[in-house]
Length: 516
Image (cartoon, rainbow, N blue to C red):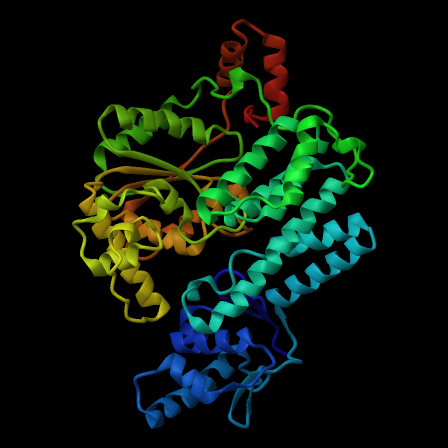
């Protein structure tokens, strides 16, 4: 019996008997689309006419029906060569993905684990709830079929699963808070707000977690962040219940209110995130060779992509910081951004780098069609251009290429050709943003810093960024562990004196990765 594994969260990935299907086995892009549509409403009958409208809207009915029959047959043999009707069956009026088919689908497992976590939380079994929710979280690689972001047939299911994922993160944060593990609880709240910064209920959780962790100042800052977001972007004020909680936080009386929310003391009794001042910008030590390598590439590249790989705390950001300072000193535009952890909207690092609120006058030299394409990236365009045209509907692939072209025109119009764009934490990039950055590297020098250990087993950011035709434009710098002499120098500079015993212990215990 054929074993099928299907991943729908993020881009579609299908494995048959644990072997990923390649482009040759799919035979056609339409075959993939048919499978996506059937799985989007798994168990329901999809009318043949609906598939024809999605796949070949401009073809004659007779021609399109013949093509659909061929594609269905090909897809059946692709999924199960020994039993073509194992997964897709014909019903009166259409087709369906067999509800009882023996296959692994990530959305099914995700929802089962989310439901398991919900039941455990209701029963106050925090360990079971955390186990289930963490499993669900790791399955969510990205939005449902993110490569079909603009297709109407996938919208409702994508929004439903995204909302379920937000609920998983919210309840997972609550589980950790109930255990006094506020670092994790706060981290998951911030992941949610990075995606949707207008969720007042999440801000309330964040305020409570900071407060019970002993960080009243950070609780008040979270409230101000909430108030500002709601006022500036939605024109509303926080709810009275939120105001009542923050009043108790201000005067420190929340502890004494028997009717208020209760959480345990923090497991960790120190401050949550503060670090010594001297460590906020550690000395630049032990990376002179890599620094020289980057400067040489910068001086000799007009465009292209550089990948900087290394473990957490190995000094990637500090190396890039030094490099970007030099780039700025040479009069070159140097832009910096970061790929947010967890789920994020497509292209969010690009929006952040070029400014989501760029003044509308920066776009006056672009034609109206280009402006309409760029509006999702730059909302300020609408302010000075109320009469933008409606864009013709295209397939997801063609729409993506249309966006690429518009971004290229924007880069040229802003005289940004030859600029340097640095993206930190690039292991968090989604597939759509990777593809856009790769196209932008035709005009810019893109530097991506990422943690190789954060990628899935067998995955490689270089593999994603080095498709056919781009080999000479993508270069990799893999940071090695710091040598003992560099660690001694780093510690001596921080301590402003010699500490040979501590330096030896640091070398021994960190294995060449002292910033971790």
